[in-house]
Length: 124
Image (cartoon, rainbow, N blue to C red):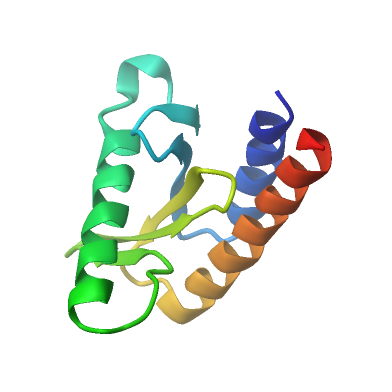
């Protein structure tokens, strides 16, 4: 599948940042398309990303922020940047808490656009 192959390349690019620990591309239905962890080590990451996007959409609407562009979840040890893709998937990147979140967010946005462009080019 073209989008899965593109997700592999995006994961490689994001792992050039030493802080990045995991990349997930998932359907908005919570089913994984790509998760670099082995099947035995995967948890419900894809479902969690779908949930985070749903919560972000409600918060954006309730607070009058305009359409949601994703979610950034900060934990004590790590941060997750989750971006919806126009093609119906999402891109989630997990990194150590010490990462520059602004830089990571910009990179995730750029790679999300790339995945959408690749999907659109091969869907036509």
